Amino acid sequence: MTTLRGKTLFITGASRGIGLAIALRAARDGASIAIAAKTAEPHPRLPGTIHTAAAEIEQAGGHALPLTVDVRQEDQVVAAVERTVATFGGIDVLVNNASAIQLTGTLQTEMKRYDLMHQVNARGTFLCSRTCLPHLRKSSNPHVLTLSPPLNLAPKWFGPHVAYTMAKYGMSLCTLGMAEEFRDEGIAFNALWPRTVIATAAIDMLGGDDMMRQSRKPAIMADAAHAVLVKPARSFTGNFCLDEDVLRAAGVTDFSGYSVEPGAALLPDLFLD
Image 1 (cartoon, rainbow, N blue to C red):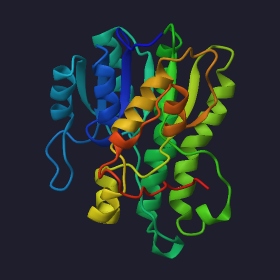
Image 2 (image 1 turned 120 degrees about the horizontal axis):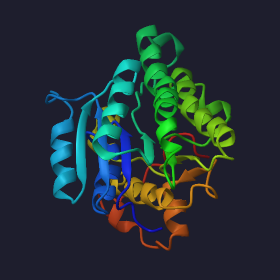
Image 3 (image 1 turned 60 degrees about the horizontal axis):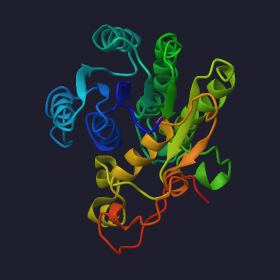
Image 4 (image 1 turned 180 degrees about the vertical axis):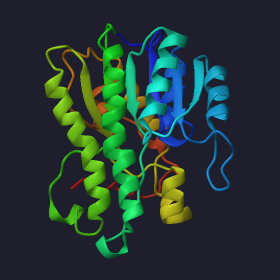
């Protein structure tokens, strides 16, 4: 299979950034996409809403269902999944993209921020996976793709921001555990992480123009996600993929077009030695 045509994707955090890029890549195949995100009204600092994302998806050739969802709220997730199934007939792919970040040390991390990161990242991934599983079981090629890093236990990735690392690795542990739990059922659970920093609103707020110039466009993650999601679920599961490696394996040799500023030195992402 080389296309997502006829497939239904449930993507969290798909109103902007990497989530939207993955949605648009699937839309070009003619896929149906449930946009499960919090931003229904324009945000003062962040681009895009579920409605602007839906318009872009439809324009790209897909079918869109904008859904206001806070992945911390079980009732909202359940209702969104039920509405997706009622609208499109099922769910073939879950993309756990929604994430919260704060790169602070222990004494600088307020408990409300700790709770936010763990509720959105680890708990949200578990909740969305759990809620979609009964429908994924009915798919001919079911995939869960989580945007989280390889489990690198080097202390240097914990010391500066232990709260965020724990929360992000919680997403990766869901991938590790559920891939094994549902292996015999043929439901694929894989993780995808960028080799370099990706130009998103979060990166803009963290590092400003300088960091953005040393980043790659979200399209590289979208193309890598697509390459994973068209693979046979039964034979490709439990992998911690890097975007560049996935695309090299698919035959891509020139990555220059993904750079925000051609020729600029690229910043490696967190958690990669």
